[in-house]
Image (tube, rainbow, N blue to C red; front, top):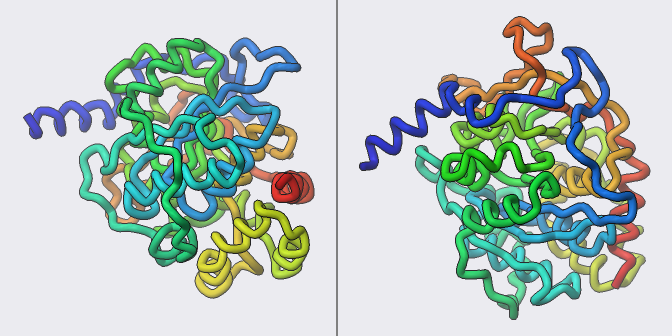
Amino acid sequence: MLTSRRKFIRVLSLGTASALHPATAFLPFGTTVSPFGKKPLKADSAKRIILDSDTATDDALAILMAVTSPKLKVEAITITVGNVGFEQQTKNALYTIQVAGKKGQIPVYQGSSRPLVREIHGSATYVHGSDGMSDSFFPDPEQKPETEHAVDAMIRLVEKYPNEITIVAIGPLTNIALALLRKPSIAKQVKELYFMGGFYKFYGNVNPLATYNAWVDPEAARIVFQSGIPIRTVGFDVSVKSSVFTDEDYDNVAKLGTKHSDFFMKINKVRRKYCKEHQKMNGSNHPDAITVAAVIDPTIISQSVSRYVDVETHGELTVGALAIDELGVWKKEPNTTISVEADEAKFKKMVFDTLKLS
């Protein structure tokens, strides 16, 4: 049974997943305009989103921004394998909802606690602390996770709101790949998918050509990128260039004196130190948060390119790399809008506005 499952997923990851839904509504190669062409929501309507997360420090800020934004309707938070222990990630998401004052209003569903076919990679406690929240060790949240599996919830919600759901993936893509494997038809019903991962003419953070969220489960990432869902990436490069909170920014956050600002300061203690000492930044970057910010206000992304993207699943040195066909040598229509530049001032204002709320 295990062997047949592995073979089935391997075949899909090698190419037949593109049959799930042909890439449509994309502009010609080389365009710098977003290709998302599905029916827009009314101007006064909140975007329906599913936030798929491996909740640790930066995911927590992203969740805080999403659930407090009047421009988003968070239908679900789904938990995927990733940063720290699976149960701890679930608690982190639930506690963040509680901090946001939304206890009992946003359902949290647990999904896959391991990649599709690979062994669990370990954890990123060196970035996020042993509890994923910079060793803050918050009390257990009052809200509990739902009993329905995240994959089932994802399929149910996409079918309930066809062409209305935006999936915001700020962790590995395992849950989304599993949903596509179980119900391929949902690829045609997802409005768009924002993925925090990859980069454009930059460098990786787990190997020279890959970033964490694709590297953890590259087979899942390949299935998703070949599914035909309109995808926008907000990559590591964008976060390094436009989402870094400096010491001055932290001082200004501390001066706010709110519940949200205190939460931000606590959950970023370990991350702030790691980014400065090991990633040569002038502070801490916030890739998940700037991804959610782009969903809230797409004008935060000031430049993007449309390209065909595939995912490396076998490379000895490059597993998890997003292979961007810059010159169109594969002669395939673009399947991804890649964010290239973002408006740092707009992003930081959005974060500060969120932290001022409580």
